[in-house]
Amino acid sequence: MTGSETIGPVAAGNLGHRLGEPEFLQTWRARAMEAFLATESPHRAQHLWRYTDPMEFEPEGDPFATSLDGAVIQHAGDGSGADPLPDGVLVLPLARAASEERETFERVFGTLVGPSFGRFEALNGAAFRSGLFVRVARNAQIEIPIALRTLIGAAPFAASRVAILVEEGATVTFTETLSNREVAGGQGTKPTQRHLHVSEMVIGAGARVHHVLVETHGAKTAALITQRARLERGAKYHPVLAAFGGALTKADVGALLAGDGSESDMSGFLSAVGRQRFDHHTVHHHLGRHTRSNLNFRTVLKDRARSAYTGLIRIEREAAFSEAYQENRNLLLSENCRAESIPELEIMTEEVQCKHGATVGPLDPAQLFYLTSRAIPRAEAVRMIVAGHFEQTLVSLPEALRVSLTELLVERLKSL
Image 1 (cartoon, rainbow, N blue to C red):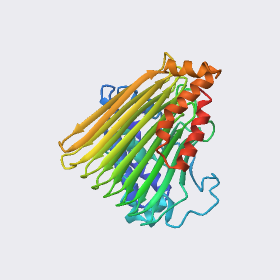
Image 2: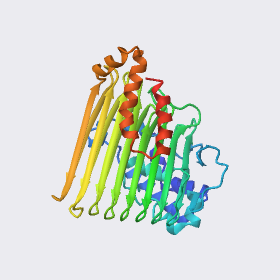
Image 3: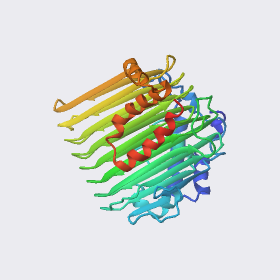
Image 4: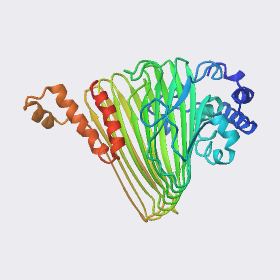
């Protein structure tokens, strides 16, 4: 990073002071900056950086000189944000939450993705300017999805954070959208701006959470997304990843199944065209007994698009009688696109059931022939096959989420 030698912990603490943060959070920022300066940029030989150049995420100039243009809370599904939040839901800017909700704030913030997580996560912790804290009260049954939308402008660097606490016995759905204020989508041009985003969630015992993360950055954005959730006893977590935009997106998404009987059921949708590049890493880390995880990640690529997927299942010695399954299916619509799929299993106990599967291949010519022989134009036939490729994952989602994601996918299919 140009000029990083002169940007130190004091600058990070001063930023927190200007944002009105309490002293303990300013100190946390300074520690994050120390970790960033003490950590070298990842080497391309490192396992999770084989397919992406880390220099693409190194900010040019002073990361404290620019900011994210804003984070806007929307709810009730209409995008207006005019209606009040449902009873049992608290949403605050991070600075205010740190002052007014310190006890619950510290149960989440920095506990899953802290300064030691990695170089770019440390920079996020030092330089974020937009952030939200969400708390869902114990046993609250929230029927309206809580929509969190992060918009970035034209600034060359942006950092944002979300911290969510879902207390014991609650039920809630979140939709989290990352996009640009100006133009969404993109064909994968050379990125001129960087966006570092961190999302942390703690899910209390017996809680039920759906969490949809939709990435639709503009054509000149390189986005690095880090998301972690911790599940307590009997919690059920259903994360959904939908990645469509940006020049380059690298995502590290995972769940820690800490409590006995906790479950994570993860779905992924990725569609890339032009020269877009995506690098996804998912983690299901089983710590509790009788835990269960499932992952179904579907990819469609066209033109010269690239996708790399690495999925880790780790089951600790004390996590006996756990089950885990992982599936990654990649559909290639042109000769010059490419997909890499690397499933990984780290199993420390014999009392488990684990399966994984991965496929990479072109359109089935028999399917294409069947459709075109019935007077369906080839382009429409391709879109029908792609829709079927995604449908196998969509059917497992609740109706409201299935409808909203289907609308996104239908719009995306127009570019295929």
